[in-house]
Length: 611
Image 1 (cartoon, helix red, strand yellow):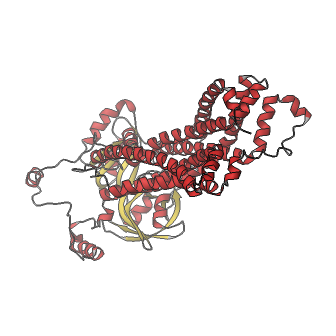
Image 2 (cartoon, rainbow, N blue to C red):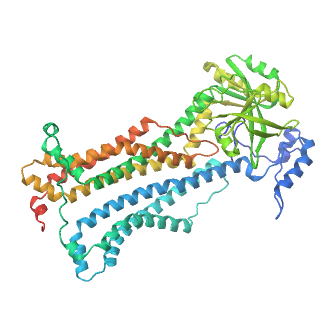
Image 3 (cartoon, rainbow, N blue to C red):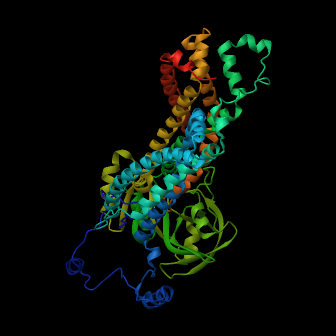
């Protein structure tokens, strides 16, 4: 299912494929009648896998077998399981964030709706309707929105699921993959959406229950502004009357201002997180193929070879530099943790393929120990200074005890590094290599590729640029592709929060705005009183949204990371800047819409309320 060329981590059908043939025809073509290189075994009920593996290793060791292993360590199964695990983690970490922001938005809308309809609530209670009946009326309003959104989301989810199943069938070579709608998933999705919306409305409904008819039917008591913001004479000369009105109104309603700032900040946090994750995917590629792997070509041999093969490669016309490496299949054990992988042995001071620390500086390979990728060390629960048991799965198959001397920040795969001479020494096989990293003349690349492919000892020739494109294709499919959808949803929610805040503020203060128009302020000045407040709150929300977005990006990146790749999260100013521009654009569009309503404001209707 997961087919990769020698020396590579991801499939690329354009350069490597599996050809299926009848066994007898293939055996005759290669004169290998009866030969096999892999045996698949199905276990009976109650069989003990560990004991069977040990027995198979003893039985097949004289015939050169590389060692038996269970389904959990089979390469295709491992990557399929990692992909499913990534989808599972993403489904548990990302949706609650979006639902939480949506619940906050509903809370804000419903709270101000109840405030605007106090008199109607009081009148209904005065005519005998209980508080519960009135609260259920508003709850139905929330449920209509929640159910409408949940049903629309279910339809979009089914369409996305069908499309994703087609991607997996093509990518993992499944003979068939049927998309089947799980009723339980549909029920859970709708239920969680409705519960999140209801949770956002509960605090508002408590106020509806507690509101007495006599109190509700009276206009709310005017707020006490006797301790309002006092501007000094110097500041008063700098600010015109509308500007002073904006500052005083914010000072008089700090709770409302704080909630508005928090809502806009949450809206900004969503695109910050998604843009940071998208930048993390790009940084993972850039780090691996610009800083770690700086070779042009990787050549892998069919089996470990001596220095003669390296000499033959170095003599090819167009090879500018060559660095040998050796890759040894191993089982790494530490306590109850184990990992089936390989140790990659490099030169003392490699230049074409390097192990880097967290500061992207080359790590010195030491003869006395092994350097593990940080993700691998976490999987094995081991830290530098502790001993690692290494079971070699080729040659004489020694079992080595090697200390961990450092951690490398490799974002693709989970490699382990050693010094080439040190590994060959403990293996008792000096001078052996598994391949080489090459830097070549670009003008000779096509001819060199053909020459190296025709060498009988070469198993595979991998071009760095083609590996990079194959990895990008992997990241842009499957679980990684959902980041684009999440980014689009984040943008929609951000605009919804800002626009609803502006619309609600206009609805609440229509009477005040009409009064200002009667007192002689122009439409532009009245618009500035309202929109200046929105603009100031938006600016105050930007730094908070940036901070919340960084924290959220850590959780989202953890959901997208798999064993195949880890998504790094750094403070990328460009991502935060783009998210801030998106919020400012949403505020600008909202302001244009509200200013249009101010121009259309009916002064008589706005002022015709009962005091």
